[in-house]
Amino acid sequence: MNRPPPSWTAAIAALPLWMATVHAEPLRLRIATFNVSLNREQPGALAADLRSGTNAQAAQIAAILQKVRPDIVLLNEFDEDPSGASVADFQKRYLGVGQHGQSPLNLPHLAMPEVNTGVSPNRPGKVVHDFNRDGEATHTPPSATATARERNAYGGDCYGFGTFPGQYGFVVLSRFPLRPNAIRTFQKLLWKDMPGAVLPDDPATPEPGDWYPPAALAVFRLSSKSHIDVPVEVRPGTVVHVLASHPTPPVFDGPEDRNGRRNHDEIRFWADYVRGDAWMKDDAGTPGGLKPDSRFVILGDLNADPFDGDSFQSPARLLLDHPLISAQHTPASAGAIEAARTQGANNTRHKGNAAWDTGDFADRGNAPGNLRIDYVLPSKAGFKIIDSGVFWPASSEPESKWAEASDHRLVWVDVEVTE
Image (cartoon, rainbow, N blue to C red):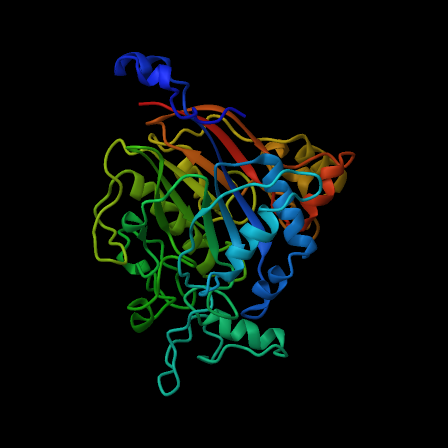
């Protein structure tokens, strides 16, 4: 992989500025997204696992990252740790140490936002919101011995499903410095404030969009985790806006399809944001989307396949067909083709190209089979796509064992920065 040009030598520095600029090597970046499945059932459990430096799952995840060597990567399903210890340990004890014969990888810059998973609006003495309408509004996070019903009852009444605040969080890691004062988060943006939101219907009533009562809609947030815009300065004066999220899966609901509709609008948010729409307001109160001609890349496990699965009205197409997004070059792998063929079952009925799959899921009954749900989508402005791929080795390759650390596969795109 080509890397950014080294510092100018004394000879080049002595040349006229225009000559140095003309002969500079183009800046190429490898940008990736990876749902790493580093989530645990209890707060602090991931930090404890990573502290030892010997966790087998984390070592396999790190080996994949060291093999692919991204310059910028989003890691989904990395439990939020307010102390920052878990991310620091992953950087130092796993990425910073060669795993499975790979070389260490230094990604020192990071952004880890607060997320809505496991965060409940209910408090003792003020337990009023029964978001999942199971007949009880809960406010106490489940204990380590809680039943599945107790976990679901709590998680279903949170802004985003989770058994503790920060479960299923995410982190952006970068070789390049961030502009921390310019990071925008949309964790608290209300779903009802999106114009034309596809709010879920109560099928038992004739009124549209009435699954959530007015009191719930007054507090219910659009993002199941968060939507975040991280400006990364890849060279002086050149910024890439990393647009990261992890929309809710469009399942685990009923005929109201509340998760499917929310997934749709979480994805639609980015379509509106990169167009520069004015309706959204970030957590600091600043309105509006991206400025025109901004250089950006949308990253994340979007939980939506453009052809298959349970998504509502194919929301992935809102991005894949967007006039500002470069989506003609689809990342693919031979391992995904092999997996779909050998696992068979529901995979045989898919409309999409199996080579594009990024998630290895159950294949029988109501299970979806393997899907394309993880995306790296650069803007047309400011980039030229050079190459792309999905880290899904064939079963005969030794690296295929690493991929078992997660039910998702890392997706990467190589781009050349243009002016």
